[in-house]
Length: 233
Picture 1 (cartoon, one colour):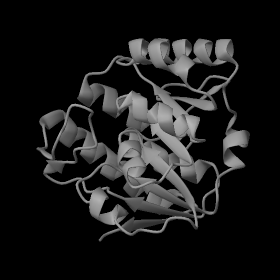
Picture 2: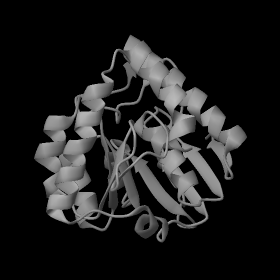
Picture 3: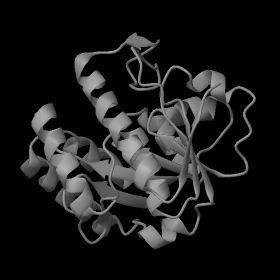
Picture 4: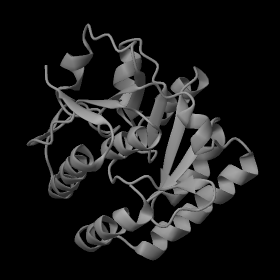
């Protein structure tokens, strides 16, 4: 999904969610400066070189833990959406790629990064402080934004960490994208936020995010090159 395709979705999202386009743009500039200063950034070509034809994308829905038990994902690239990194580490799985706006458990993201996970860090108007505090801690980082892309900060489409991870896999050349833990129901999985200790009833802003994520993944199914598979266990 290029910027011209993403822009109508983005304008709807900022309108309905009450976000600031200008703050999103400022966040992208902050992330760009941090990446260039640290010289640990990745290009899309470098990250694309590690992606296999099958990508397993892990979302934080309540079905995640059952799907992980006994699962074998060694025949593809494992992509964790933010907080699912902690669930994967609990099962002895180090993600190949982590897609995060830094809302997950930072110590677990750092552990995974130190063990080899590539980081895809997303900038938006609400996480500038986290970008400044945590991006310098990581190595092998590719930056993303939800506004116009910059030279080393990309926009592949997608809104939440989970659907952005699927759009990333599509853009980098996956031929099959297997979605795991994408429930979009009335319950928010406990891996969604560090302060959740158990599954929680969905709240209104999360419900809106679910709706956008479901719509965007539907777009990807119809318009992307990759086959999208929803894993139910």
